[in-house]
Amino acid sequence: MAKKEYKILWLVSALIVGVMVYWALASLPQEIIKKEIIDKTFKGLAWFRFDSGEELKSWEEKIFKGKVLYSVKVKKREGYLNASISNAASGMLYWIKFNPKSHPFVSWKWKVVTFPDKKEDDGKPGGWIEKDDYAARFYVIFPRFPFFRVQCLEYVWDRNLPVGTVITNPSFTNLKILVIESGEVNLGKWVGVERNIFDDFKKVFGTKPPKVGAIAVMTDSDNTSSTAEAEYDEIKVGYEK
Image 1: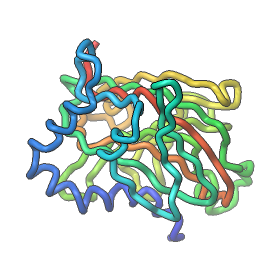
Image 2 (image 1 turned 60 degrees about the vertical axis):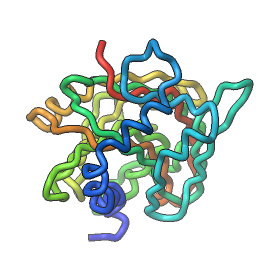
Image 3 (image 1 turned 45 degrees about the horizontal axis):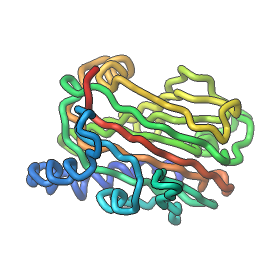
């Protein structure tokens, strides 16, 4: 199996290293979460506005190939997380444990500035690798024991695949890729997203989800050896409606 097919294993590796410590120190995330909640009217578990670089300190970078430049940009007291890359792949992960049945919603805003330069699918073997670059990804990660049973929902904005497409990663079948934004109509514009992760998990895995262990964002262009840029903001995690 080609080396690049293991990109998703940056998530699994992160879970192997951190999951035991995380579950053992269950009180730690609660202290972190309180710092992220700025508006008392929000009844969820975490809210990231990226109004200062301090918010990014509670996230961990996981590197697959090279480093994506993740930086908080602030203009007139309002900020966002910018991800800018050239032939690289790394993601930002935030540990947070909660029950998706009682806290099923997550939401965020994202903007694609530049898509990675994907080629049209020519049907050749290995074509999956070329297609596995996305300007914007949002992960919800469900740890399970043993570690190889970890399950992931990966929401992506793709240039060509239609909204509603669901893909099972052929290198890691417990990862489901959901295309929830597509094309260039909204290129350069902020797009709001809200997902019921409890319902999404049941739909694509056919069973009820275990507890969430982390969320992550990722922008990458290593497989296409190109450039990409995206922005993320207003990440809200674990709330009811």
